[in-house]
Image (cartoon, rainbow, N blue to C red):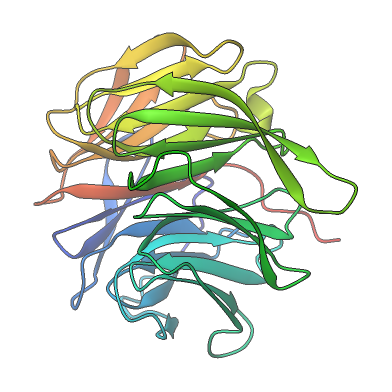
Length: 316
């Protein structure tokens, strides 16, 4: 099966994962994830595999074959897996779950290599661009930095007590981190390097972005420079695009009929894909704010999307 240059996948409460031709909107492959809903999707940096976070397992599927069965399963979580991601070389994967743990998995070996206890349901985990710190956000409002070198929690923050942190995002150069919560608020910090390797958070801005929940926040990628944007997807059916310089509202993307659960930028930041409870995913032009493609086929809420339209990392 020839590998498409653009890999776009969506996951739904209908227990399926769908692969789409980004330009035409045609669905060319459907995977039945029988035993579980799909909470989160992530594509490996080399574009070979798609990881799907479910309840409670993570499944790894081959992107370039029609094999409906996963090539690997990761099974030590005991509740919904809500966060997922890969180290830049694709050697290991990290995950966060409602079981209160953050885990690290070596893709070349069975089982879980490390586990960190957040003591509350983990909603979001991001990897700092330095590849040595994970930042997690949980249902009790805690943000924790996990130092992978020291193998310990190096920093704890509670921006708003008892307000769930829904989503975290870090700027590609490691200069900013944004946390979005259930009150529609984004907290923005500058990330400062101390004399040690530990990351320090300097409060920069508090943004009241939506009246409803923010379900996903995402900073634009490196190749979007010199523009820097923050996208916030909300239960109010919209996605808002903020200019990071001053956090002014640039655009409001309207078209979804229900909650917008997830969003992902194209590699150059020119497009945004969104996933919604209205069972569709949409492709938006960042320059016009218009939706230029609707991906229809799921029968229930579409809650996650993954896009890889960049080059694979070159072999070192």
